[in-house]
Length: 144
Image 1 (cartoon, rainbow, N blue to C red):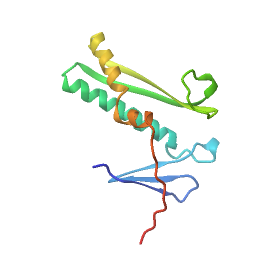
Image 2: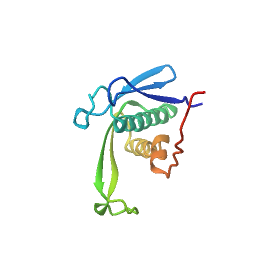
Image 3: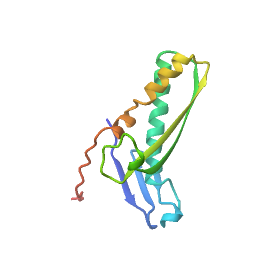
Image 4: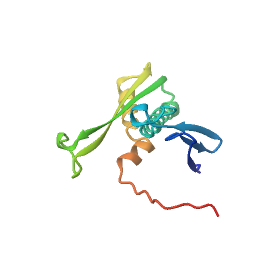
């Protein structure tokens, strides 16, 4: 069962305390956006979620097949591109979110194994969530 994530505004402008079960981390905006860069930005956290899910999915797949994958590294970046530059855009929005995800596979893997791992990486659960239509139900929460 997934743990509930609780985000609480910190004592300093834009710094957020993030509690996930026993884990605590901080998020913030970069200095250029008025924050103090005291933690990853929300988009960096989103990229971290996608990157960790991708790497774990690839590792699990290789482990189950006992393939000689020694290490996997995922590098990600996020940008906004103009939709008119996108040949496959079906949105009226002038901007399109673009994530660049590059994977490095270290190990004595065949080309077939590398191809299969890359295909599996593109289907990790977080990738599937971000690629599909999503519904976010926003409502006020009050302690009683």
